[in-house]
Amino acid sequence: MESHLLADAIQTLLDDKKAEDIQQLDLRGRSNIADFFIIATGSSTTHVAALAEELDRFASQQKVPLLGMEGLPTADWVLIDMEDVVVHLFRATIREFYNLEKLWHPTTALIAQSRR
Image 1 (cartoon, rainbow, N blue to C red):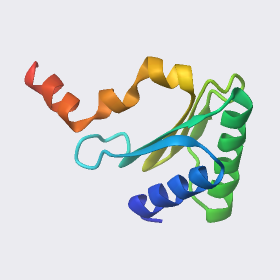
Image 2 (image 1 turned 45 degrees about the vertical axis):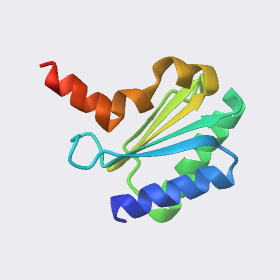
Image 3 (image 1 turned 30 degrees about the vertical axis):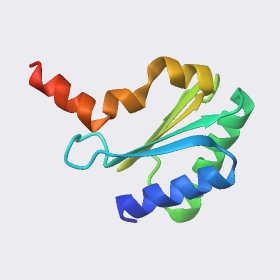
Image 4 (image 1 turned 135 degrees about the horizontal axis):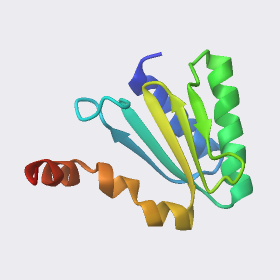
């Protein structure tokens, strides 16, 4: 599945499962880590874990490679690596603390590069 189609499908799934503040960050041409980051918030650790488990089922059903899943035991921040798409699921306070959107925002990246 092409990375942009996978990212869109993941975003739809997370929306259907009541994830909050879903952001899709296009990293193509800016990172060799992944083409897209999907960042979403769950209402509790139970919700974050359920979202992660749903994405695990989705990957299996769609035959999308799941390269790794980290953080599930505590479910404050779960990272799911689907090769070209990396999903970050957070509880709200953890998401606010790490603020990945700011770190990966195109303007922020350009400022960081200009300081090198």
